[in-house]
Length: 335
Image (cartoon, rainbow, N blue to C red; front, side, top):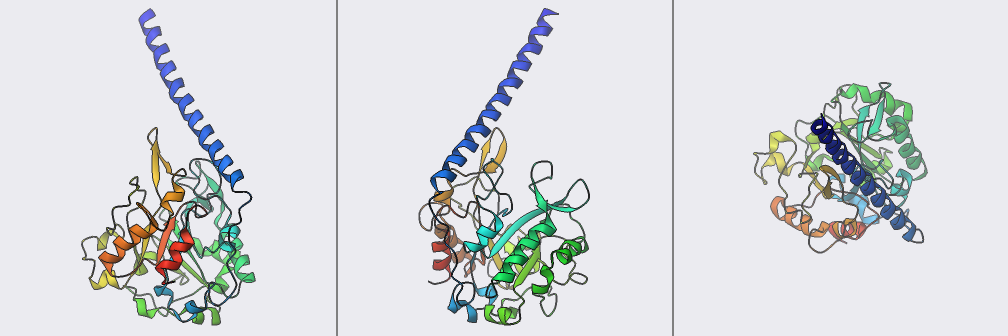
């Protein structure tokens, strides 16, 4: 009996030790993030100038498919906790120059589509309709801007399920709808930003899985138009540009028509492991989001451009306000 009690005590001590380490990590990680936020409180996220199209006159005559955007990964998950990917809210991201927002969706406990990080138990950033309404209100005030949103369909719902929050938000009035649903998207089929602004079709919305363009024509099937490099990388060198999704294209050569006629998303957000948990690497964000150097946006983009003969259409990043993301965006667009 004494041996058994001793074993139970040892197990309890071990469990308490793990929990203590985990709590301490979360506390110190959050404390460092708060200190980082306070340190940057006097700095100002640049406000995108309202000139031309998306801030540049040159973009007005460029096709949508021929522009590289910095995109915020998990844009709605804002804060200082380890699982949160951005430091500032959606409106501030848009004001700061972001024109491509990515978010995860899941059904919450009430059966409503919400912005949930992996699951709604872990992180629920609110209803999808409210997120879309924030973007719609920003578009109302910025008539020369084209915004892209990419939603992940975590519960693999039929795309029809997304119609209600889109309609309720009022954002559909700005939606771009292609002339047809291609089995393979073609780069030349896209209008210029100037044409999209003139037609007031200034929102391009994609869903990664189960889009139903026949019934919800403004919610486009991501992988008809894009492919993606691997994500959730723990490698700070980002030494890969392989085609990860869609799986059907993995065996295609980098210069085949199926690959060439799609845009691509370069996933450039770094994760780290703590006690077996994969979380965003906030500590190294400035280095990850640099334009030049080992593991930088520029280094990975040069590698990918060399393989595929073109720059990425979107570069997905965490903590966009750390580093040189807009310097990278300008350079990748030839400025």
